[in-house]
Image 1: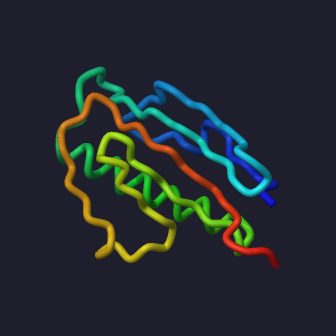
Image 2: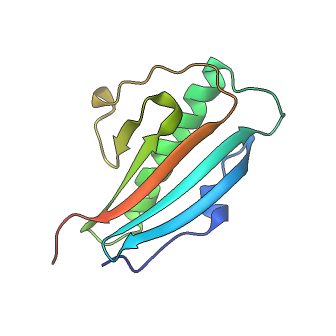
Image 3: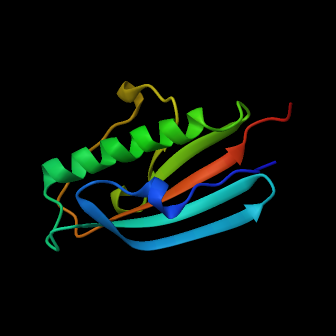
Length: 117
């Protein structure tokens, strides 16, 4: 059962502002949080910035996982990158990233129960 969530400030990333934030408890086993990151400068994220922000997002997912019970996992779906999905603790070599210039970075953090203890 999902019994912990995080606050909007926990999703913040330096150099960005949050342009959208929705949290949905799909059922007692899955919580999704959609976040839209926009550049703080008001311009676009260039390729290097996109890669950096994506790396920070995957690190954030791993950090969230470390704060959750062992049977709850975190994954992030990158909506602007053809639903590229990162699962916490995933080997970086399995995560094939092709960064590009983006106006914003839309992601869905998904917290779900993997198994019952």
